[in-house]
Amino acid sequence: MRLPSSVIASTRIGASRRPGTGSAKQSPATTRLAEIASSCCALLAMTALVLLIATPARADDVELGREVYHELCASCHGRDLVAGGGITFDLRQFPKDDFARFKSSVLNGKGRAMPAWADKVNEEDVANLWAYVKSGG
Image (cartoon, rainbow, N blue to C red; front, side):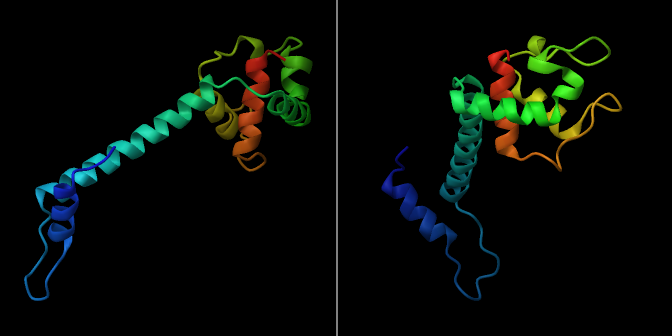
């Protein structure tokens, strides 16, 4: 998005402060520019989340996720996402469009049913685990 030069110029003028003039008041253009910047940041964050959810996983991501899964998750959730009975969630049934819930569950745990892994996994591990779970094992 390209801003008109008048907005850019008034932003520079409105943002400047001369000594002895008291507190600087933001011009309407400066306020509007801040609103646009905030909206752009929000849009960028949403786009990144959509891309993470909607982008097909690469085979490497799935394989790395499988490795992390077998190291940390398979003892409770079973080999290839198939729980062998008990109280653990069958990860094949996990909603494929709910990365936020998946990430929260992995990082924060689920009470006494599942430990929190925030201190043992990083963002890449979580993304790879998600790729593996979305692949269906």
